[in-house]
Length: 193
Image (cartoon, rainbow, N blue to C red):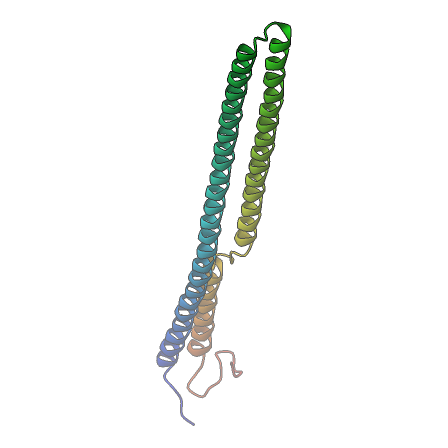
């Protein structure tokens, strides 16, 4: 029977326990960092997508405002032209008075209604753009929360547990190896381990 030196056994088991704890800790941290990196990349993609959607919404709002300005300008130009033509025709025909005024007021009223319609339509479209932007934000917030929920637990407590386990193994090994006698029996006359 080969009896190993208790100190050598203790040293070997100590190195093995600590080595296993260190390797496990490195593996835990590596896995954790990979998962966190992937989650951060996904969160960044959500942010970029949200910014892009906001930019599109802002562009759409600017196009609506430009369209309103163009239609309003066009309607006002048509009104000015109609009034000028009406006044010229009335003057050439020798017509004056209430009928000419009523005709010009009719042009103004019709154009005013058209202008109100253009403004209301543009306001409705801009309101829809704002609602879409709120929806974009809510969607992004929900997606980010979903990503946050995927974060793995911090491996620190697991790593500490590995080292505590290694320390307990070392202590156990020390007790087993330091209480054996040369014949393999323990201090109390029975075999240990």
